Length: 295
Ligand SMILES: NC(=O)c1ccc[n+]([C@@H]2O[C@H](COP(=O)([O-])OP(=O)(O)OC[C@H]3O[C@@H](n4cnc5c(N)ncnc54)[C@H](OP(=O)(O)O)[C@@H]3O)[C@@H](O)[C@H]2O)c1
Image 1 (cartoon, protein in one colour):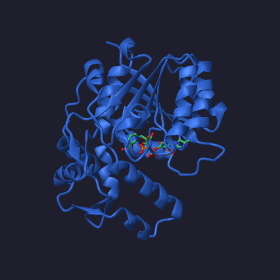
Image 2 (cartoon, helix red, strand yellow; image 1 turned 90 degrees about the vertical axis):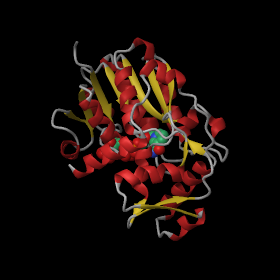
Image 3 (tube, helix red, strand yellow; image 1 turned 30 degrees about the horizontal axis):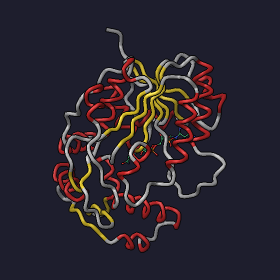
Image 4 (cartoon, rainbow, N blue to C red; image 1 turned 45 degrees about the vertical axis):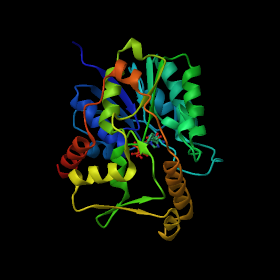
């Protein structure tokens, strides 16, 4: 069977580096479009083809997407400022869509958050930046290029970002259980969606198969990832005392407020039917991430 091929924009990020590595390990021929090829060369496996391109530069994308049939977009918006002239996930995605049309791209996939599909799960409201991302996704939909959107629950990978001095800090009152997903689960779904006509023009929720609280998930994760790390939950207001720049503290506080009000149901039955059930537990994710860190 011919090798599956995929171009990724945003392959060098926190989650997307692991997603890209996992797709390579599944046998996908991956090309990445990156701002900084040298950085990408250091971060990604040698077999990944690297092309220079910046989503703020439409001409660079027209060159970079030459020959691409299937594209996965993995960008991010981390700000509480809703009045910037350029966001990668809105104006950047508009540039991507133009370049994709120009090059005859046949399928565009993109990561999104579960809030854009199931707002009702978010009792404390949702992250404001979803509006930026949704405008970019609307542009993809309007392009008539078939799309697949992945609306993800929280990534268990993210726990590693909250560690300081062997303590993983969670903030606020977090009573509800969530179906934590992982970079491995999403990579598996992307893999199954490539060259799959059933996945065209679909909106898939992406949730893990087990429900657990944030504290339980973090404890299970670190027991394998690094048993020296203990998990501590602090009041939300503590974020104001961390000495972070104001905008960063505001964004972090809002994220944890949203987490506190996140009460989800399992809605990913169809995703599992069409794209497979994730096999990796939170412990298996932690073990593999640990290996990657050490290697
Ligand atoms: N964390 C969660 O629990 C969660 C849950 C649901 C959904 N998500 C989604 O996950 C995504 C964030 O993933 P992440 O943490 O992996 O993101 P990230 O670390 O911020 O990575 C963003 C990527 O975009 C690239 N990029 C930025 N500006 C660019 C430009 N002008 N041109 C080309 N590339 C550019 C970055 O490249 P450089 O390396 O050059 O900077 C990087 O590869 C968001 O869409 C978010 O909605 C996350």
